[in-house]
Image 1 (cartoon, one colour):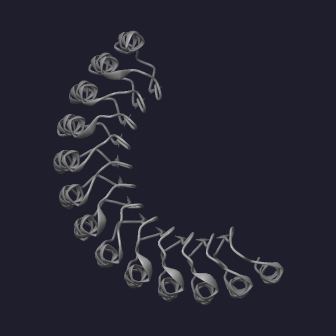
Image 2 (image 1 turned 180 degrees about the horizontal axis):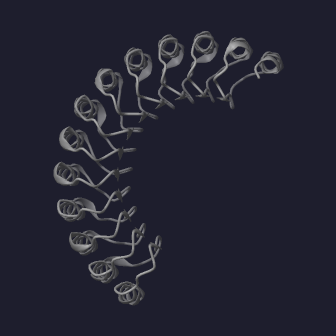
Image 3 (image 1 turned 120 degrees about the vertical axis):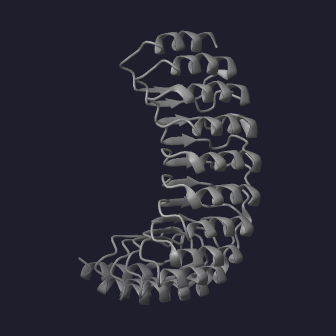
Length: 351
């Protein structure tokens, strides 16, 4: 805290420093108070990293009070601090008035549904925040509901990261309903959120209407083949999504077939991650057949998918004709000499 006091005293009048990284220190609530006092006066600092600093709700309040007056800070990192719902409320109250902060990182800060509600309420009024990171918190369906309500009216947020929360199918539905209306969000991370095929149905339906989302991360959920079908049906119609991450979702060869059928028609998706989905040789065949027709996909990740020589042959046959794919990830499969030969023969032709 004493060190933070000295820094704070200096920052009050410093006019040249624009980035300050204090991550993984022991600043605590008292130190946050000193820094907050400085931020009320400082007009130069634009980026502040306070990750892993034992800052609690009290420290968050001091920083929030500063944000009401500060007109220079654009990026604030408070990751891995125990600010909780109370701290989130203080920051949310500040966001109602602050007109300069564009990026707020709050991953692993013990925020639950109540904290998400406060932040959601603030997003209805805030017109400058573009990136909100709530990675690895305790947000469930109720919290997703509040954030979804905010996305219906918010017109500035472009990136929302909810990786490793607990929103489930119900929470996915609330966010999906918002995506039908929202016209600014471009990146949404819902990976590791206990979302199943029901949740994917809602998200798939939303993608039929949404015209702004370009990146959707659904890795490490439980969508299965049926969930993959809902997304595939959406990809036939959607014309904006460029990146889809379905890593570790158990879609199998059936899910791969649904996605492959969509790839024959889709003309916007450039990156597809199917890492660890047990698609096997049959799934590889479906994807290979699709790649003969698809002219937009540039990156395909098929690592850890139980693909053997037969599957490698189908992919190799596709690569003979495909002229757009630039990256294919096939690590940790079961491809032997024969499969490698098929791929090598294809690469001699693919130039």
